Image 1 (cartoon, rainbow, N blue to C red):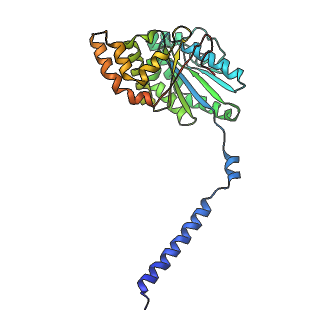
Image 2: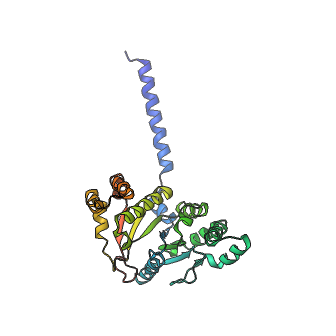
Image 3: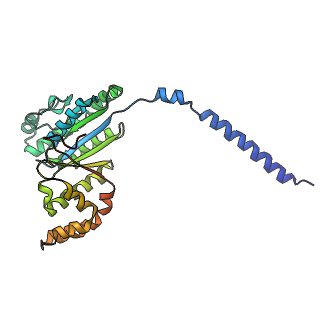
Length: 275
């Protein structure tokens, strides 16, 4: 004799299965409709770097490479204090905010003037995003130059607003430009890596290390130091100062950081590595 309870549970199971199938049918979207609704978005490349690292020259080379490769680029300048640029910017903060007038009006020094100018520009940054969104299907890359005083962008509220506005709308990458000749010193190299690490965890965005000026000094030493902490420790062994001891201990701690970022050697002058 059949158990009525077992029969009832089987019927409920079948009924629930039918409901699930019906729900999935309603949610299914044809391949044709999904591709027609998909809107292509350009990749945002935010270029940051220490003063003198060749950041703006590197961006100029990126602009040239984009043009030569028949890629459609859009350039944004966020440095209000730069006197001249080696490239034409589609959107330039200097057209909106007058850096010297900001200094005079608010009685500020150079760094305070740059930060306040960036803060004022950030209040209207939704309009910048809207402009790029309207041209999104016509663009492959948006190249962003930042102030030479790196901390003004990476650690300010306005820098966070701008970065998050980009990242919430477009695929966004941060490129950290490193002065390769100066980084041949293990202490300077470690300082750069710590700063790059802080940018990675602050922005939570993909990070690329661009070892610039490889026409002056090859970046292979840096790759070796990143791949094998023992090689770095051997390079720093002759220095017995406190900073070398700290750098020595940090080399192993940063090993996981090195494994999760991409790095490339480039020359803003010759164009090597920009391919």
